[in-house]
Length: 98
Image 1 (spheres, rainbow, N blue to C red):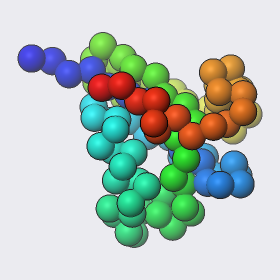
Image 2 (cartoon, rainbow, N blue to C red; image 1 turned 180 degrees about the vertical axis):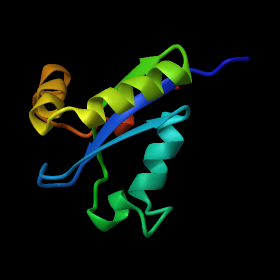
Image 3 (tube, rainbow, N blue to C red; image 1 turned 30 degrees about the vertical axis):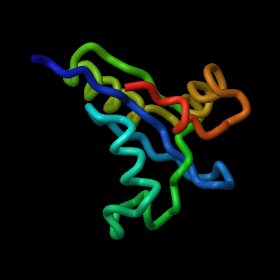
């Protein structure tokens, strides 16, 4: 059975730091970020706990390719992506359906 994947963007409470990631289990991965499961990670260091964007892909390979594309882009492109789907930059964690 093939699993799809998610690309997601987290920010801190000031919406100043952006972190882009990829996972096949979004709810669990965001829980890990929010609970400092990896205390030495970028998201723990910069307190990026707010999920402001995510998108699902049918294959994890597609998700990885999109994550690389987003990471390679300018910061403004990430901000535009967030603003298109979540203009108020609300935490979307409770809306995850897996």
